[in-house]
Image (cartoon, rainbow, N blue to C red; front, side):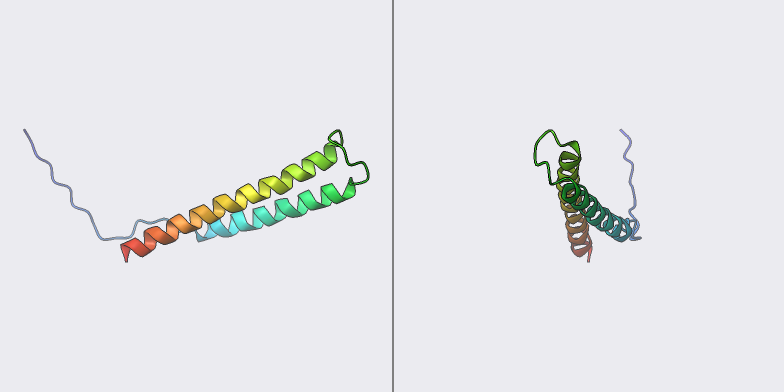
Length: 85
């Protein structure tokens, strides 16, 4: 039976997630803004048959999901970096 040994270098091969976090933050705020504008423009007919209002609410809910995913990525990366140090 052959035994192979693997050496691990001390180089940091971590990915930098700061640009991704910034992009997702901008995207979340943009989606929230689009949702607010769409919802406020079609608030006169408050009904589930008002497609513009429903799409606006969908954009606002989607922005929350994008922001939560962004926060999770940031926290996981921060914890991984702090464990390495």
